[in-house]
Image 1 (cartoon, rainbow, N blue to C red):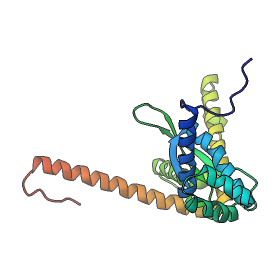
Image 2: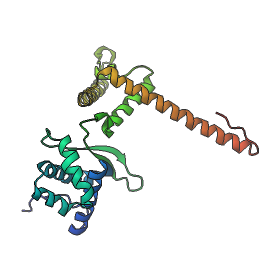
Image 3: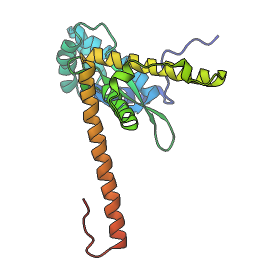
Image 4: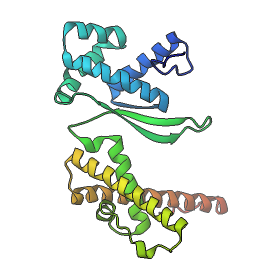
Length: 237
């Protein structure tokens, strides 16, 4: 009977797989985050956590293991044994986070952002930025403050039509809102933010999104004016 696989093969031979993962692990430790496919990100998470654990121990043998596996040891060894060791001194594991970011154009491969946690400034993490952008989009659609309502989703059974299929759909939507509320509370707890402070982040992002939309609309108008008025077209702002 065939036993379980020790790791993901990633559709590569062993030598190429080792070289790719060494490169990815080095870049992740050097830059703090990177984009790759979901299978590679999950395999990379295991190796990055191991390297950070070796850096936390800080012995000569651990340093030699890091230098034997990673590229650019003069850059990554101080990061592992100084910066990340201090950051995760009180954390036993789980030093990275994998955030799905959709599918790649062309082959439609599932993509993910993998990042090393930043316990000092959690609001700088990609996952926090995605959460704020999601809340900002919800606020733009509904036209009112969103954080308090997202934290406390309400379910009115009387407002749902007395049809089993409709009631089940409404109940599933409410469960999804409750799950999203738990994610918001966890992010607030990690970043040491109150609901009012999170709302300020959302308001800033809403303003930024509205400015981007206005600039995009202005570009489209200017392009249209240049098409119908090719000579001395006015710049509309």
